Length: 503
Ligand code: NAD
Ligand code: 6OD
Image 1: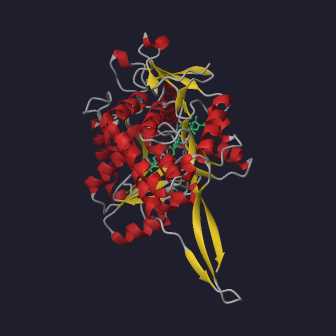
Image 2: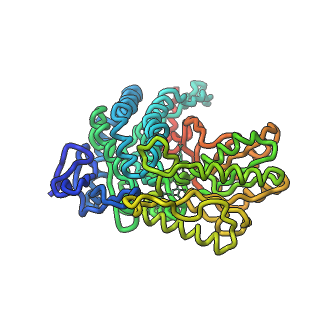
Image 3: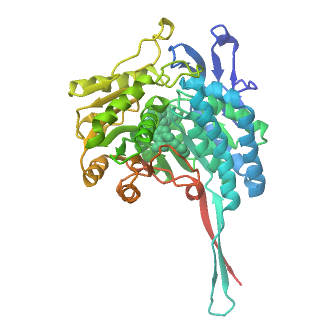
């Protein structure tokens, strides 16, 4: 029998003696169990910190049915103005529960509190507020038309929700990336079934409480926990009741989801992997380029899709740049989330640590010069089982190396020299991915020239991860399909309908 405890995460009787929390699915406005429990481990020390209720086909089906009936219920008949007020209430609700979201996100990811406090949680609120403003202000096109009888006709366009949207999320910025999809989906009048990453179930579950507090009708927001194949991810993306799927994660997962969506010809929006290049010209503001590159390589332990894993530096400043980057990386304090001095936390899991360390070993086998890092840091005994790795910088490999071609998703980067603008553009573009770049130069013409020809969805000049949520966001080549952000999100989350009125 399914139990319906009142809150997102509870210290259940079975688990309480270990200090372990129980994290449930959220379906039709209530917290429900699944078919089995799986463990959530802390990245800090690998201790079990949660038992998560895995949704089976039955729960996924119930979630999709709840979403469908909410679509035809009060949510579907609400005016845009009423929906906008609810979205503002959601943003306020996240802010009111700021500390709860902060501690849940930190527990799941191990990331520094300073990072989550300034980026992850505020963006969770902003993602509701901005899309409320977008739908409130977006105009509709209208054409007056002549007709043979002289009476004329009027054409206008209406935006209607696409229906039930499946939202499949990764673990690196859990609340930020989930609300980045849920915010616009709800703003456009859709209902959602969210499948958070198995590594980071807590903030999605907690958001259910805020939905109830904000008066969101039951069934508008649903959460099913679990894994990908043979679990909630597959059940959701193959469910015929899901009208559209929005996904963030690895490119090969996106490709599998695209195949699932082809059954039923359902639209997808895919935000996928990257192997992003920074391009540093000798005329850059050197200190700003170092500070920005340190952030783009090591923020969130390198687990940011927009992060830099290739740095091209113009030869006259190459040695000085590598020395300064090394100094900055070695100053990064590795530590616990709530220590304000912590600059870098652990990776998400033991499994991801093994993957990143396999690249550290491969780089050495391929003949890389390890400028700094390349292993695991010394940690106190109680943290020895955590997913800690050192920030790592390599030189001495070229563009053909797997280290320069494959996404590692860790705190590591390969620095390579270049001689001309034409050469660096060609080399930066010689990659299957095309998500983001950061160009560092004080030459305005060059900045515009390079930004225009680099094959990416986002080109930053003299900055990194500076986000205006009204802009198009997405990846070129194998980094993505479609754009979200501002009015671009409306293209995915609404059906445009032409109404033609003969006068
Ligand atoms: P992942 O692809 O392994 O998992 C993402 C989600 O998909 C998880 O919820 C997972 O359970 C689910 N999933 C896995 N297989 C599935 C399947 N066959 N069917 C349905 N669902 C399935 O990615 P991850 O390891 O969680 O995240 C890291 C990756 O995400 C990196 O490649 C990173 O670049 C990418 N990412 C991209 C962006 C972007 O905006 N482009 C943002 C963040 C992360
Ligand atoms: O800022 C965003 O809207 C966004 N989608 C960021 C993605 C970061 C990837 O890890």
